[in-house]
Amino acid sequence: MGEEKKMNRELIQVLEQVGKEKGLPIHVLIEAVEAAIESAARKKFNSGYNFKAEYNSKSGQVELFLIKKVVKEVTNPKLEISEEEARKLSPNVQLGEDLKLPGDMTVFGRISAQKAKQIIIQKVKEAEKQKIYNLYKAREGEVVLGTVYQVEANLIVVDLGNTEAILPKKEQLPKEFYRRGEKLRAYILEVRMTSKGPQIILSRACPEFLTKLFEIEVPEIAEGIVQIKGVAREPGVRAKIGVLSLDRNVDPIGACVGLRGSRVQSIVRELRGEKIDIIEWSDDPAILIPRALSPAKALHTSVNAEEHSVEVVVPDDQFAMAIGKKWQNTKLITRLTGWKVTVKSESEKKDKPREVLEDEFEVPKDFLQIPGVNARIGQQLVEAGFSSLQEIAQSPLEKLVDALNVEEMTAEKIQQGAQELVKTSEPTDSQPSEP
Image (tube, rainbow, N blue to C red):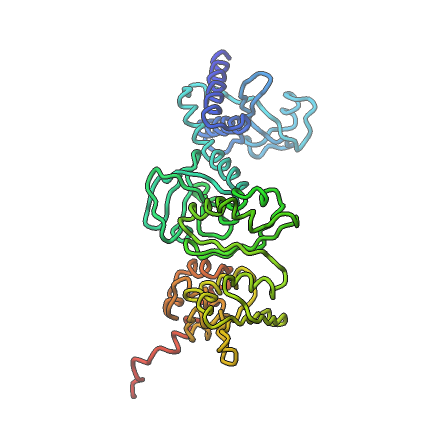
């Protein structure tokens, strides 16, 4: 009995030490101790017995029990006890109930405190991983500050203090370089549990990161006086953000720009020079889209609500400014507003319109032959780097899912369509043999 009490005192000390080191709740550690004792009992007596370890909070001891079911006739002595024998031990026990018999705690008594600590640490690793997962899962959608720990070809490993996160290549700014030890601010894009533990994925390229930076820098947005209605980005190059004031005395653009541009310039520096256009939002596309084209002047705006499209006519000398380099400006407006935009110069009014979703992205015609691929999806494929049907057909499915932001089943159908087109376009290498 003295040996058991000594062993339990050692375990309690281990619990306190590990709990302090790992910052884990006591019930998690108690469950780990119970599991360790049950494991030790099974190893000593081999399999077949049903052991149950329980922590007695009153005595501060861990007790081991052998669980047996009360039956009329015993067929398995390891798991069953007769009703007659059970009543001798517990007069009120009923047929079919489980009876707890005191187990031999010496199976754990000779394990040193250090060995016990090792067993417990092994058991709590899973709980530790779950704790990190729960902590950062609840923080999805927040901005965190970390330190660059390791720079690899396809990702950056970021130290968050109590765990590590990754910044994949596609979530980095294109002209950004990172050095070990450098501070880095990023958006928690996704937290998922893997076989190796929680994986925290960061982003500096998503529109949500820009939204959060404005929430941090502009008190009126944080307080809800100014709302962000939409964001579109070409990461590291240019962005457009639509804002609306709920207080007529507050200028939403002025609030975002700040005194002498201090607020917006702080965000521009964070994004390594990404240019940001701030637009006062309107639910009327005839007002909103000309504002988004500024400083180009819209001479005429025509809205087709049925087709969800807008045609804008601008002066000839402002056409290049209105559409931007490689149609960048028009592309961002389309993403920001959700309307299909057609831009025409004054002299081209009677000519074929330049449609943002087809001409600007130079989508290969054979892309549009794939079942389920329209001009918008074709644009996304081009933006993701696909230049031929063969590349789509042979691409890892995960890359298509990421590029199109669709479910795996949809991406698979598009890939199968590309494969069929490639197959039908391949020349026949041989002729059938004559008999």
